[in-house]
Amino acid sequence: MLSRNQVKHLHSLKQKKFREIYRQFLAEGSKLVTEILDSSFNIISIYALADWLRHNESKLLSKKIPFLEISEGEMERITALSSPSRALAIAEIPIMPVLPAVINDLVLVLDDIKDPGNLGTIIRIADWFGIESVICSENTVDLYNPKTIQATMGSVLRVRVIYANLPEFLSSVDPMIKIYGSFLKGENIYSARLESKGVILIGSESSGISPEIVSKITDNISIPSFVKESGAGDHAESLNASVAAAIICSEFRRRKG
Amino acid sequence: MLSRNQVKHLHSLKQKKFREIYRQFLAEGSKLVTEILDSSFNIISIYALADWLRHNESKLLSKKIPFLEISEGEMERITALSSPSRALAIAEIPIMPVLPAVINDLVLVLDDIKDPGNLGTIIRIADWFGIESVICSENTVDLYNPKTIQATMGSVLRVRVIYANLPEFLSSVDPMIKIYGSFLKGENIYSARLESKGVILIGSESSGISPEIVSKITDNISIPSFVKESGAGDHAESLNASVAAAIICSEFRRRKG
Image 1: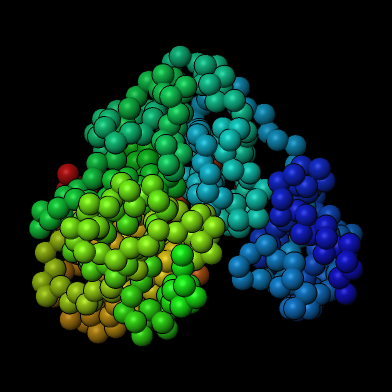
Image 2 (image 1 turned 30 degrees about the vertical axis):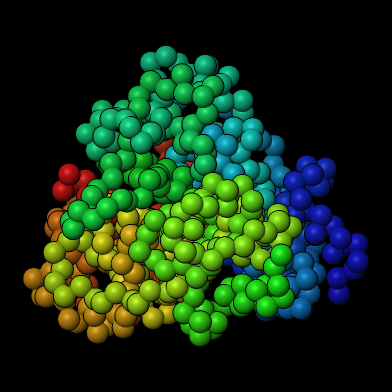
């Protein structure tokens, strides 16, 4: 049975302040917890339903990971998600990777992405397209927010996510490397020249790319919109940040493929 | 000031059951409410903060739309979103459009999309790429869920969203029209033959395309994943449903552009 202190500690990890104090985060979901078990991440403890524990007991014992069997009701009390799962882990926040010294592939740079779902989805996209590093502005939402972790669907275990001062980082990039920024008015991405290595800047959901880094962009690119066959009226003014990131990464990788 | 009955009615519209009974839905956000005002949608009433009303008063009066000034505290009580906005409208659910009789462009077909954010994002993608019709299976999440409406960012006003029995609809499609389904193993979408008109099937977040409609697919396509430059380990097993829809629509439209 869960103790009062355990419940208090689990709840505290929903807040960034306490994640930073304890250097711990929550990972929820049967699949994600199993993946973390097989990763190099350090697990502090696991709270899970009886069937999940039975299924994973030998691994937990061999890895000497403390675990506690809890009921569905208890899981509902501690979950940070809208629908509780069968397993929840407290894991140690690893030391943040260092910025890439040399850019020899694509790198995604996120400017103040605020929505944890968008950040997680972009990390999953980076993982799919084999992009090793995602560099986030210091005001980007926390990677270890439970909703971000959930949206990465395990990709948080494979992609290097680094928080950095973006103007400084972009100033340090080799001038031979292109810095691509996505704008409503830019060169059509389908016909623009796209290098196989480079920096791709993704702006925030509400205000796009911030003025202090716009000047670092070498190539303005744009995802063209299409007018309806019927030619009827207006159309969407923009795309969701993670959707734009997906289309841009896809187009870069298509050229390389 | 909000009456108890108004609060009760507003809250009831967060539930599909009551949206169906009243044939009304909630639209929130200053920009969305302004767009609805300029659309052919029928607005029942508007609840907004003083500054928003001042800004839009002449339009509200000329269109004879009932409105009520409320405080920020009252908006917090009635909002269906995590962060309350400055304006909220109750609008009439319009009559569902009919299925397209002839397919002369791209049509998106969604099989049991469960997440309102995903549905809304896909409608926004359709709008961006000039796709007029989105056809949803009967088990797809409700279009008029406040989270779906919010995620469409106004595209709900421009895209025709139709709920239908998918096996029946797909059986009725002209055999000359291709039905594309996205799978982990299929023909590489970047090199596959893609027609400028056709049906694009998007499967559910958890279980993909359901068995009873898989047989209707004429072309299996696949978004290739890329192994990291470092060649390190595993990578993402799949993409989010709206991300996959975005990449597929982008690739179809690129060929046409």
